Length: 468
Ligand SMILES: Nc1nc2c(c(=O)[nH]1)N[C@H]1C(S)=C(S)[C@@H](COP(=O)(O)O)O[C@H]1N2
Ligand SMILES: [Mo]
Image 1: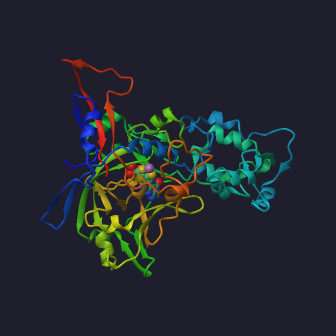
Image 2: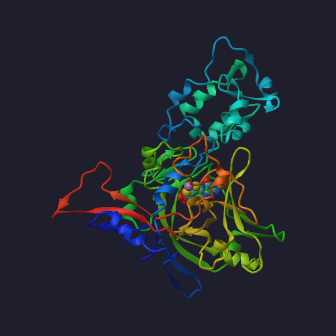
Image 3: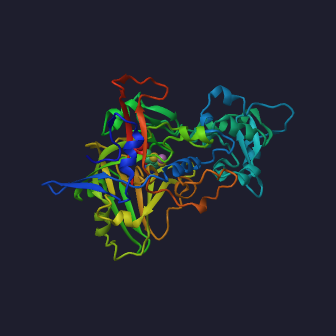
C-alpha cells in the first residue's frame, strides 16, 4: 500500500528494512492511481530515495531557529515552571523608577529601546542587535514585552530571562505594573479541544505528539492523534465568509475563491505523510545541543487528504508550465503574530504545477472536515515535502519569482552541518528544506522497555518514512 509511514512487524532490526527501501533514487517510485466514477481521483504515494544524507539533514534541521530562542538555551529546558520564571522581573532595590510613559518614549534603536516586564524596565537595544530574531521583540518596544511573551510563551525559559535581567535599568512605577496587560485578551483563549493522549512539548503555541505505540497502531493516523505543530494561536475561521486570495505577481491577475468555489473543482484524494523537520530533535540533542521544541519520534502522521488540485485552480487562471516565468508558490496562513504578520512559506512552482505532484487545497482529512488544529477550512497539502510548507488556514497564495520572505522560509527550517552553531550560522547559505530524506524509528518497544524473546526472535514495531 501507499504511504510514507508504514506499520511494520519485523523479526529483524529496521536498518535492514530501510536499507532495502532506500536503494535507488527514483522519485515517486511506486504511486498508483484510483479513478472514481464521479470524476474524483485518488493517488497513493510511496517514495524512495537514497537515505545517506538523512543523518546530516536530521541534525541540521535541529539547528533551525525557533524564533528568538536564545543561544545558550538547551532544548530540554525550553519549558519551565511559573515558579522559576517568577524570580525575574521582580522589584529591585536601588534602581531608578520609570513610568510606562517614560518607557514609551524609547521605541526605536535611535532613542534606545526600552521595554517593561513585570516590575522591571529594560534597555534592550544591544540585545536586539546581537541576537537572531531579536527584532521580534521590537513588537514590545516602548511598552511591555508581556503581550509578546504571552504569545511566545515558549520563551519564558530561565536562559532568556536571565539574560534579559542583564539589561535591567530600572523599576516600573508601581501604579503602572500590570496596567498594560489588564486589557490584553489571552491570544490563546480560543484554542480547540485536544485529545488527552497528545503529549504537549509546548502549550502556547500548542505543539504535541501522540505516544509512539499509538502511532504504530494505525497506518492512517486518526485525526485526533495526529501531531499538532502550531507557531501561533489557532485562528477561528468562519467558513461561510472564508476567502482564498490568489495573486499572480507576474501578471497582476487575482482570483478570490470561496470555500464553495474550491469545492467545485474535481475532488482529489492523496494519502500523504506529514513530518515536522524537528521530529526526533530530542535524539539530536543527545549528540549535540540543538534548539527548538524537544520532539520525540512522533511529530509525524499519515492521513488521507481531499480537496482541489492546486494545478487545476492555477490552470483556470492561465498559469501553466509554458505560460509563466514564476518560480515559486508562496502560501500565507490566517494565523498572525503580534505584528500581524501571517505564518508563511513557499514551494518551487514545478511541484505546484506538476499534475503528478498532488498538491491540493485540502478541506477533508481522513474523510472528515479538516479539524481546526490541522488547518480548517483549507490547508495546502504538499506530499513529500516537510510539514512547514503544508500551510494551514490558507488565506493567500502568491505566484512569484521569489521565495516567501517569511521567517519560516528564510530563517528557520534549514539544514546545516553539525559544525555550524549559533555563533556562525548564516541562514542565507542554506536552502529551505523541501523534500525530506528517509528515516525509520522503532515505536515498540519504547526506549528502555523490555523485549520479549520468543524462539530467538523479537517483535518490533516501527515507523518508516519513505520521503522523496
Ligand atoms: N498557517 C500555519 N501553517 C502551518 C504551521 C503554522 O504554524 N501555521 N506549522 C507548520 C509546520 S512547521 C508543520 S510541521 C505542520 C504541522 O501540521 P499539523 O499541525 O497538522 O500536524 O504545519 C505547518 N503549517
Ligand atoms: Mo514543523
